[in-house]
Image (cartoon, rainbow, N blue to C red; front, side, top):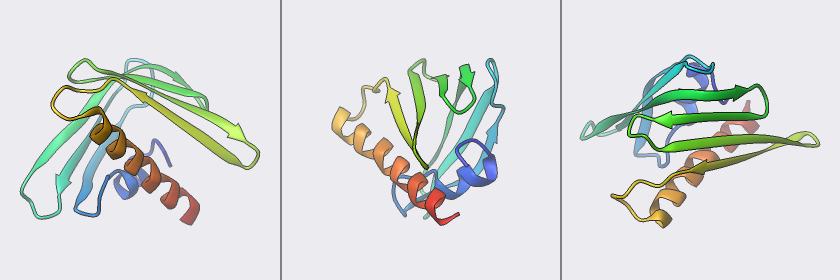
Amino acid sequence: MWTLPQHIMEWNNATADWYTPSAENDLRAGGAFNYKMAARDGSYSFDFSGIYGEVIYGEKIAYTLGDGRKVVVEFSALGESVRILEIFEAEESNSIELQRAGWQAILDNFKRYAEMS
């Protein structure tokens, strides 16, 4: 659910005003991903894309975004649950608090989607 495009398009948004109309994902070291993120009213869209540096199935995914920032996602089994920890380098246009809230909102959407499936 975390990596297949048909699932990514269902949960990858921070608010109900946004959605992911398309997603491409080549999940392997050296592979690329691109998620088109768009406002539902059509006013704005952007590509969230990067290159994978490390992929350890079920444990860790590390990638570099198109602007050079690094992201690491770690998965830890907790009984029948999975803990997901995302560590990202902040960009300079928005406050760290705003960025953290946005990334957390997307994680919360993933959790809801995974629990419903």
